[in-house]
Length: 231
Image (tube, rainbow, N blue to C red; front, side, top):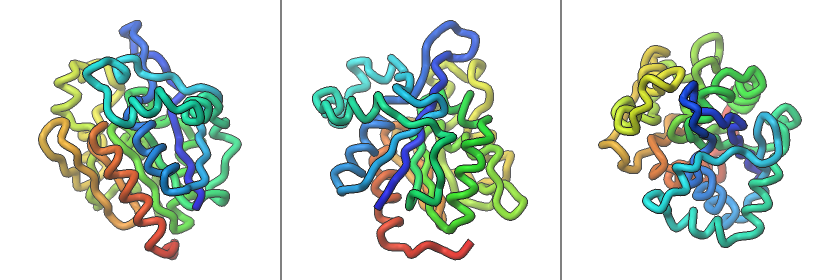
């Protein structure tokens, strides 16, 4: 099995002057779920190379078993430092794709024609796709059969309440929950920061960093057990 992981290359948190990027747990936990399963992994980002890490995700209070393991794993650190350029990958070469979150994707991947085309290519080919935390917002321009891909689908993502707790409601370019609802999605959520992921057909979404493992496991299970669906 071949899985593509797509990271952000965006490192500025709006006009705040503060850094952002991908959230470490959301990259590390799925990476180890996939690697431990023997998956052939490719990591990509719009600019290639080392994707920017949100420094908040590496604070002591945000450490998890996956982040601890990551910092002790030379292979993982090497893989994360050598992402290929997103424009150079093709859905035909992979069985599925996983988008880690962090605030960064809301600025670059959400507005990237390359990312949009890639996700549509996976989905049109009958392959599952998975996005966690802020990355479900990357689906805002993605369509399927002429309509928003998320229309009528059960989805989740970083909630308005969670964004409010981190005091970035007025900083982010859009709110993931509101955006998905405006596109006709059926948005579901648990309490702030509780793990929660949803599988609706070939679309898997996770609510927050704590949902990274369950979303990755769901994607692995779906890709292994479900034959590629007809477009």
